[in-house]
Length: 295
Image (cartoon, rainbow, N blue to C red):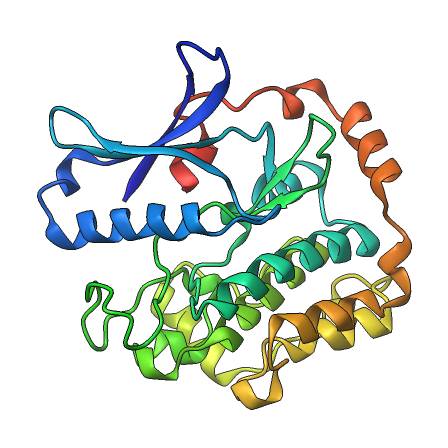
């Protein structure tokens, strides 16, 4: 629903990112309400792993927009596509940060519903190397009884099939809670470690059905060097029954932190990696890049 542009503040001369609702969606009350709710939710969530919002407004032509911090770096999708699966310790470090962001959101009763590699930015400069940032709350499910506008119809499915929990795919909003986000985060973890999601396919419906019916193949079959303790944690997340997953993000973060590889990747490793990486990966992301289209 949005387009993202690289911009510069006229007076402060500071780079920033502007998210603009697409012109064809401006007249849609549901899209406008979703956009307004996204910026309000994001602005209210003050956390190192959630993107910071600077400003919000409506242009003269009626288009809505908001201004957020600019993060030079890569999405998780770009990181894996360009450099391959991550070392287990690095994957754990990034996943724990995302757990912290989700812990805050879930504490407020907010369910993200669209955790995926292209929705996570990994900062690569400014002393923030390997700081994971969650920028997109456009599909967030508000707390029951909050009075938030009804943006989805009963039975309507929103999200990304490759990383969607079975209960979310069913369209039953009442069955979706924080454990649905943890299912998606487990699928992201699988992607970071193997270079592919747990289930693949070009047909979204077929992928959704596979998520609901088929067990997830252990990632060690694709990558034998994945530690056993980490594999156990990752495989618990995409359990079909939400009761068999971690009950909350804090529990998942704790389990990740107890993995033997959790201390294998620190700030020194991150700084060295970003310093040595191909210069084309660390340049500022251009307007209308694949990153903008992903969002």
